[in-house]
Amino acid sequence: RVREVRRRTGTVVQVYWCLVSTVPSLKHMFWIFSIFLSFFCCFGKTHFSEIGTQWTDVEDGEIIEYNLKKDPIQLKTNLLCTTDECDQIITIKVYDGVERNPTNQRDIAWKLDDYSYTIGRCTPPFKKQFTNVPAERVKIWAVLFLEEEGSGTRIKILCNHVLVLDFIIKDSIGYSECERFWGRSPSLLEFEVGELDVQHRTAPGGCENPDWRYVNLDDNVDWPVRYGAVVEVSCVKFYSNSGEKIVTCVGDNQFLGQPECSKIKLK
Image 1 (cartoon, rainbow, N blue to C red):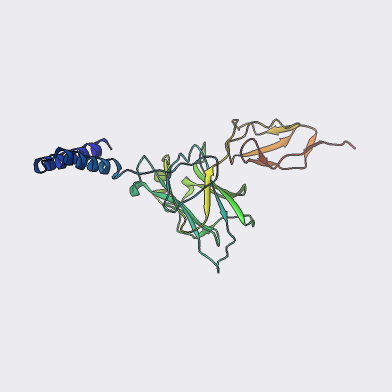
Image 2 (cartoon, rainbow, N blue to C red):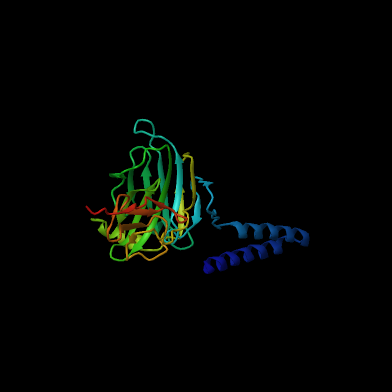
């Protein structure tokens, strides 16, 4: 980028001196130089949108600086769609670095009629489908980019806190570029939503240890856990669990599901 700035600066200076030699009026020279300076400052500059914890509308083609490995992102749709009615697609293009470079692009895309999906450079386009997608009209999709010991890089997508995709990058078969591209840290996201009404925000914060009574939590979990983390739970000795055996952090110290431990009655 420094080389580009120097090259552009040299070009502007050359044009300016050419104008100076042909325009005798100092006042005219000042205004011409101001115009070229304004053009230089704005030309080629990429303008990034900002995203926070509040819902904001997604514009088609919008680009944001975002570390998906650090913070999951949420998208909200309000649409009931069947195969006969529409073929709406949400696409998130992912890039490295600080510039939009198609040579390192990969994408995540899914259809809102049959919930088929594609992971760029890893899967055939729209041949596989999400599972267990909730039926509600309003859907909050969460995209997580995880690095986990043993499994490596994986992409998880939740819909209304339900896991609909758990894709392990290294398990991709027949796509040699998959692990190489998705093993990098994504820093730019570009959205393609067409005319679809979509909103986005940073996913809520993670969860601290809930310290439930009579409950054993997975010893391998490092607290706090991030949004979307799944934790196995069980009850202490002489107690049985009639509730959930797996709970999911849905942000801000809230869990989806909860164990219910009650003392075993001896006969």
